[in-house]
Image 1 (cartoon, rainbow, N blue to C red):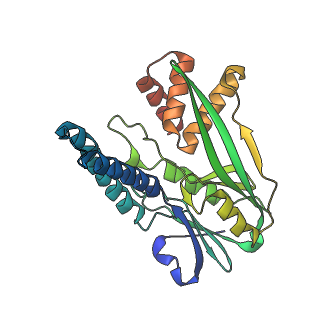
Image 2 (tube, rainbow, N blue to C red):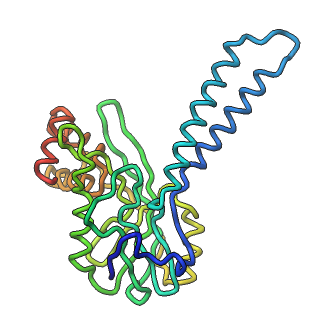
Image 3 (cartoon, rainbow, N blue to C red):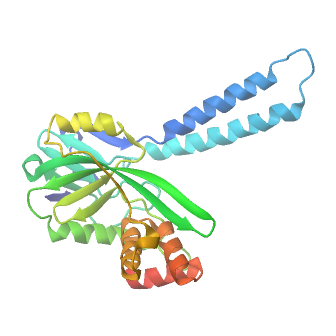
Length: 272
């Protein structure tokens, strides 16, 4: 495994790029709102109430501004997760364009093909309890299994990125940080595939041309009420390390019946 910065990446060697394309869903919203506005504004015999036209029109303008901002974010050179070459895969360790770049830390890891044992498509169903019910989320991943244990340098680099001082809030608590590259175990790197293009099936078809595919699997995160207190603490710590700060803070506040601000300060003091 090799580490490098963005400037050292040779784009001419890249044959395929997997990147975030979440702007497309917003584009559909803008299109639908524009159609609704046009339909309401078309004369139908009687004068149309201006308010009925203004409401969808303002909504269209709002979502259009949001779309333009999001498209601009997606054009950032950091907006990619995997770049493939004939020799292996580049993994973007700092693909979250919504948080500042961690300085003096490698941004990209290169894994040669001969180091990759298999690639597996994974789906996680997570249910997070709250005072008002439950939040249900589904997450898509690709697990890249390695023949040998990953080097300590890789783990240290991810830890340095998570502890980037530039993503601290006013009270010193780390903000929610989407981590596209995670560690599942010593031999497995987990790639978070939410909002990526191509989607899971297209990406799986591409990976199949290069690597052995593991059996697709789906799992449900452990039920919160069925965990022991120790397991709950471990799960909270895992969410925090993954960058799912809001979920970690919420569960800690729920478990210990404290404010979310206090829970966040406690986690930040203990885990950084």
